Image 1 (tube, rainbow, N blue to C red):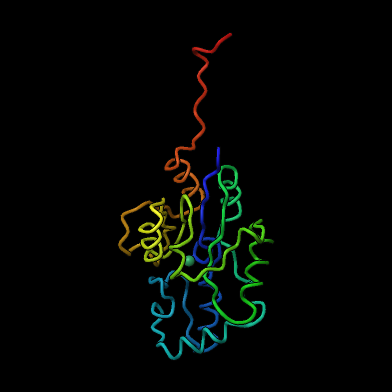
Image 2 (tube, rainbow, N blue to C red):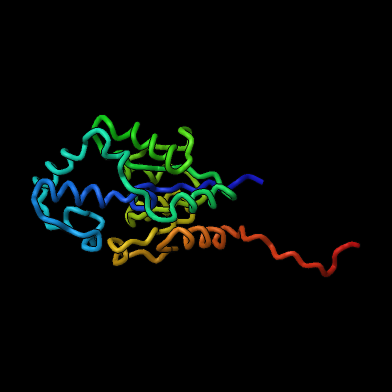
Length: 201
Ligand SMILES: [Mg+2]
């Protein structure tokens, strides 16, 4: 049987991009924010940072090593290993920018999440809709909606504080065990319970 292909977004799903971003905001403005204060997918908007300042802060984040230092969310490695038991898992990740990001993202995914290079797709969010798969796990509702409309696949929102209020009536889970269990359910892949009755002796 052909395995399902599960596409997974990285920032907000595996990688905690909020932590280095809040650090960069602190370094530039002196204002300290906690991750729980990020209540909008747009981190800068959550922190009341204007567009011009945001541009400077993001530029400052294009430094060597930043992508490699991004912390992984709890349960992400275990979660992706569970998915690999029943699916081909491809990373679809929007490149942040700068000359270091893409190869550092590759290295991060290979070393921390056990990916192989062939399964890492650097794709702008606005083009993720074109990537074929059985399911997409994403933290950005607009990307999920575009992908579902095009691919007619299973869209799963990785629920975070900053997307909980966004309009999405599809599947959702807020932690890795929940994501794995939901995908097993929706794809009908739970192991059938073995009945001893009716077995041929
Ligand atoms: Mg994301």
